[in-house]
Image 1 (cartoon, helix red, strand yellow):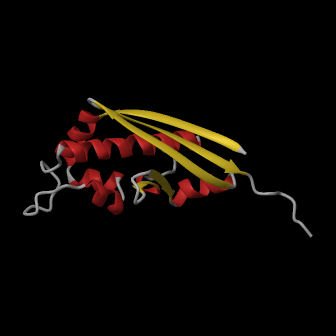
Image 2 (tube, rainbow, N blue to C red):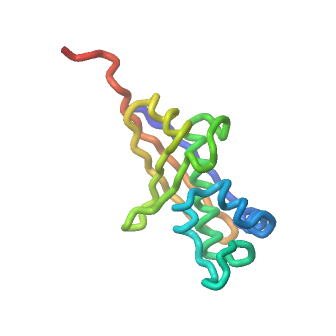
Image 3 (cartoon, rainbow, N blue to C red):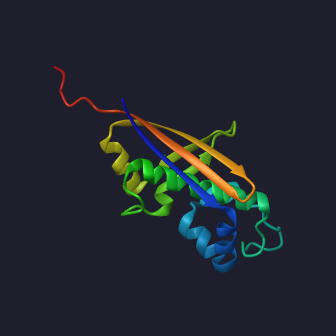
Length: 145
């Protein structure tokens, strides 16, 4: 089994500033529709995001940003050739964060074999941090007869 590790920390006001400046364009570039639904807490009379994100939602988006960064660090690629939406951070029904890879990110991980991801997110004051670990079992290179 091979282990790959990545970690990242994000200054939450930086994410809030991107939301204030770019609004929905920022969300659509960085987060999948499912991630946006998970984090959005909008005024029901206004479907735009600009100026409508509360502190909890912004913390959740910052945590996902840190998690995406941690995953691409574990992949060893950084963002080279990987779109933000190729790394999706979702919560299971019991609240456990999990990683779903798409596109180039999924292709990179598949080279390592069967990978199980573990993800930890934390928030304190103005910071969110995440650690991502990929536990990968290489595929057998021998064909069994």
